[in-house]
Image (cartoon, rainbow, N blue to C red; front, top):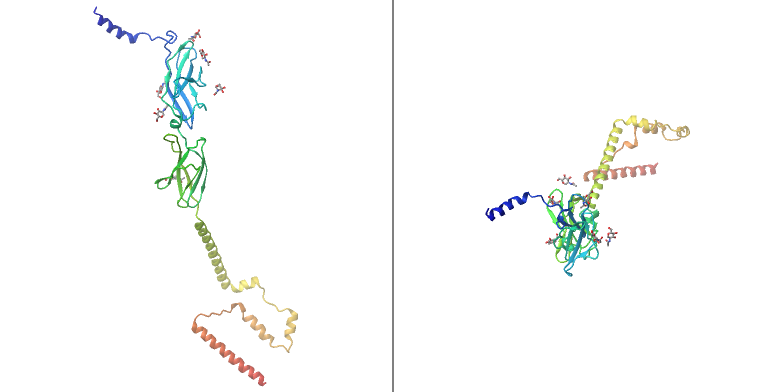
Length: 332
Ligand SMILES: *[C@@H]1O[C@H](CO)[C@@H](O)[C@H](O)[C@H]1NC(C)=O
Ligand SMILES: *[C@@H]1O[C@H](CO)[C@@H](O)[C@H](O)[C@H]1NC(C)=O
Ligand SMILES: *[C@@H]1O[C@H](CO)[C@@H](O)[C@H](O)[C@H]1NC(C)=O
Ligand SMILES: *[C@@H]1O[C@H](CO)[C@@H](O)[C@H](O)[C@H]1NC(C)=O
Ligand SMILES: *[C@@H]1O[C@H](CO)[C@@H](O)[C@H](O)[C@H]1NC(C)=O
Ligand SMILES: *[C@@H]1O[C@H](CO)[C@@H](O)[C@H](O)[C@H]1NC(C)=O
């Protein structure tokens, strides 16, 4: 049999050979898979998929190294059973470039180390959006007050906003203030906004936008005043209409109303007696006057210049009359 043929046969057979189990080959514990770093607002977590073995509990160990030291140091994740390791450690500075590695261990059997990519918290962490505390609205602006859990001097914020009905977006400038004003807005209009934060250590590390929030601007003072005026005018008009209706009603049912509100006038007996004194001027006349003429029904209208001239003339005439009368009385 030629030897190349034997080699080929071996190659074909190999895959079908039973795979060595962890227990049987002490140096071949599989490495942890899917080793991933999650970092949000500087809370750093290393995770990996559990290494499956038939029995026994696998332990894991995590180490890190920095550019400063060509060595591996332990963090608080040695011989752990969990498949994650929080490495938010004040000893690990956020601007350091670190690499982590993890391996599995079962009794004396160890897996190879699996290394992560280089990690710089300042660059790799996801800077979450700040939390909106409240929104103050005026007629032409919205003021957003917010805070951030991260205590970092270089934190800055930006707001993207738009009128809900138009979707034409605007952005504020980056600012360190935790109060941002959206200015020159329309009154009584719904505006929506998203906010994001960034840190700047080497390069900008810009975080994702927040959820959309919507707020309505207030009514302007002028509009409120206008509203008050409208109400006032409406009230006035109502009162005037009521007055006119009353007036017309009284006009129409003049006698009835008069009767209701004012029973026929009776001269008190003692006055009547006094008036009946023959020396007094005609009582009959007086009574007739009262009955026929209602002093409230008289109406005087002065409308035009001609009218007033006429009035003046009339007045003059009356004066003349009275004068002549007075002269007459002087004569008598
Ligand atoms: C690793 O992640 C991928 C995708 O998320 C998944 O399909 C796979 O099953 C994971 N591996 C393990 C060992 O959990
Ligand atoms: C597997 O389990 C058996 C019985 O529970 C035990 O005797 C044995 O030591 C275990 N093997 C390992 C590698 O843990
Ligand atoms: C390490 O972990 C142990 C147990 O989980 C805990 O009690 C201890 O405070 C941790 N030490 C540090 C420095 O995180
Ligand atoms: C971790 O476990 C190994 C063996 O399983 C042991 O030699 C070592 O001392 C343990 N380390 C710690 C910190 O417990
Ligand atoms: C950190 O960010 C750099 C640059 O974006 C990237 O190359 C690297 O893979 C990231 N590190 C981790 C652990 O994700
Ligand atoms: C924004 O507009 C959409 C559709 O244009 C509407 O469904 C939604 O209710 C509006 N949001 C607010 C807060 O008014």
